[in-house]
Image (cartoon, rainbow, N blue to C red):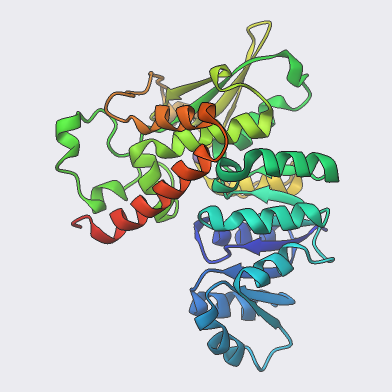
Length: 338
Ligand code: MN
């Protein structure tokens, strides 16, 4: 059985990952979180990892005190995250931290020769070439946990990547699909946080509302699958059933479908190339009824194209756009009238 460390264990993907590990008997070696010590303590007591990491230094003493009756080693800060990422015991490191802060632990895991299940897309937006070239050098695999990229990865199995014509990257369109520029002036934080199909953390839900998330996902796909941005077609698919598709040079299109549930992406990343007993419900296509596809409105939602421009500009531009987005979203979450 694989031994897993989970960075970002108290977040949306983190908790769903623990569920998958529990269901399939994967051993959790270490968990780490940003600042939620109550939940981290609860997880530590329930799953008994060898190591627990807390990113915020000022929470370290308190967590250490709370876990002093256990034999768990408590680590802190970026140093702690990196120590966990490179533990000898790891077979795979699941990185689901939010933001660019995930880049260093990802690089550290790869450097230590550990496979990475990557839910932290900012890692690839900010440091794509660094990450993929190091992974190649170290012979390490990066398994996408993002639903679209997991779909693409699945559609590539058993085919020649050199024979890919294009990737169809689907987007739900977020809560403001169909809104005009004028209508967007009156939306609230609560509206933005209401994603129609996916259960995700606040940062990515806001990014979905602005389509910044889809822009980042184009960059993520370019790095993961070694394609050009012009080979990626973004289509709005409101039902979130077809999670993405690959068109080959014979014009055959292979798509991956399921109910929209991130646990399946985690599941496949952790058990690939095997498929094991389901953690998500079956897809009932008669209940879905129909699936629709449309071009995104890049006039009202300009951030999708902005991300592509940042990629073409090269250098530190994608990292800059990513940093600007992180700060803007933090302000948005804090300030927008609820
Ligand atoms: Mn996604």
